[in-house]
Length: 254
Ligand SMILES: [Fe+2]
Ligand SMILES: [Fe+2]
View 1: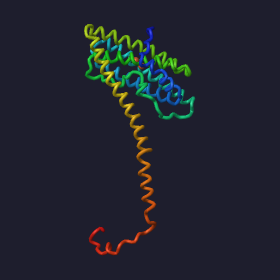
View 2 (view 1 turned 90 degrees about the vertical axis):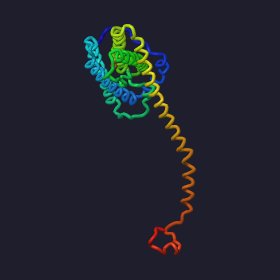
View 3 (view 1 turned 180 degrees about the vertical axis):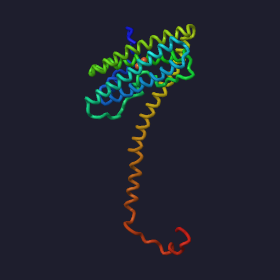
View 4 (view 1 turned 135 degrees about the vertical axis):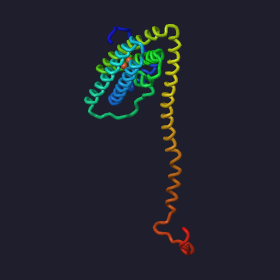
């Protein structure tokens, strides 16, 4: 879909995290990993939207969902091809170090999409917010990608589509639910907020867990290691003579 639309401006939260995004994307290995993950998210999202096209009874939505799904599949291919190019150019292989996924999740959050059993209204509200989030993040990613112009061009191109997705889902939501579309948006917003909280809490718990285990390793383990070494030094070397009384009976263990 290539309708000219104004680009979404990043949210204050995404703008605030710009230095973190810049750092995350500055490393080639990390960039490869993130592009591969983004490619996966886009393709999975495309598959879910294809399913939404199957289940909706609205002919206009079906056509729009189909075009939308094609866009998402294409985004997946663009991300994967770029990751492959970077991988070939770096020739170092790619490590799986810190990716900051809970700070910079893969674009949409379309991976949270549950298609079956959802009404058109809920689906459109969810898609609108997901596309809006994607447009906001991708505009930040594009801006921090000064050092990698081909990747920047991909974000620019995809951003164009995400902005269109963001706009058509809102227009269609207002069409199918003229009176209550704001309520659907709020409900979808609260659901996304809860999922973001869970993602953030999981990330923080992982960091805290690593810190606590490291502290335990350096603080609690040394005294036990010292005691074990001291006990080992007191042990007699070789065979130890057993008191004669202990050899009396073969009916018991000791
Ligand atoms: Fe996309
Ligand atoms: Fe999209």
